[in-house]
Length: 153
Image (cartoon, rainbow, N blue to C red; front, side, top):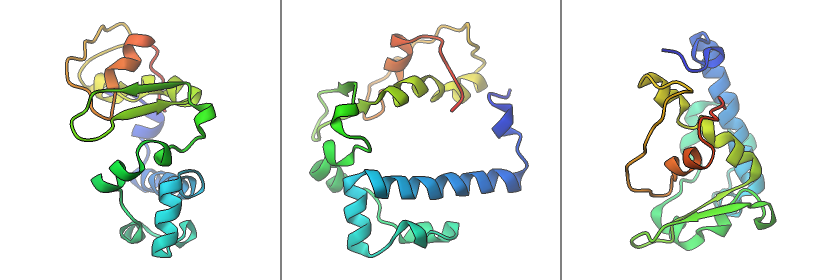
């Protein structure tokens, strides 16, 4: 079963190039927009322009659990708080679980589980119940607020 023919049926070489291009874009985007990553890149001396091949990814700093606790949530946002339209929070256990939505992210969320649902045989007419505990990803909330509005990303 195919969810998004345009991307799922790309020849391997084109798919790898698309993945590389998107990764290169996100490395630059987080450097420009997420305070934590900007500081982490500066601290290690690596810049987005240093990403030339997939093996270079190992040079970039990763986000640890301690980083999340020390910077969460506002230093991990890629948008200013003035652009946040909705926050999800849960009681959590030891951290401060929260997820923020911008209008663009909120509109795109319907596609986040579309491919997985498609593989499971769901269609736009399916009704799905998410019965699991929520963590940092609030997967089910988007479908209950705007059901059946899936769109490929």
